[in-house]
Image (cartoon, rainbow, N blue to C red):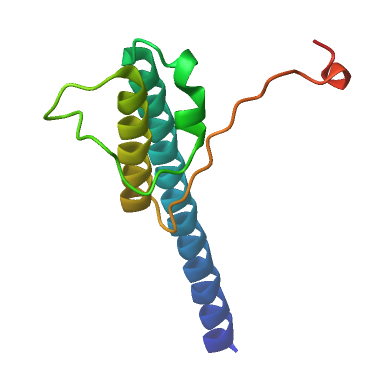
Length: 113
């Protein structure tokens, strides 16, 4: 009987340990996602015409046309380069990494703002 009670207690402790590990990993991924969102915001702030090039940020480029890290770029090319590079960071840093950038044009009246 004591062996059964000890086994149940050990399985319970093992379950708690596994749940803690899963929660820790989820928190680390969430923190990485927040850092990536902040990175995109900073990239947009550094683009002299980011608002004029929102379509480039919401698109899904297959590759950057110009490497703005080594060559001068127009604001439109910089937007395309930024979103391409940012998406590569999302893919490499998050498991199953994919992201969709969108622009909310109006707040629904039901939100009460």
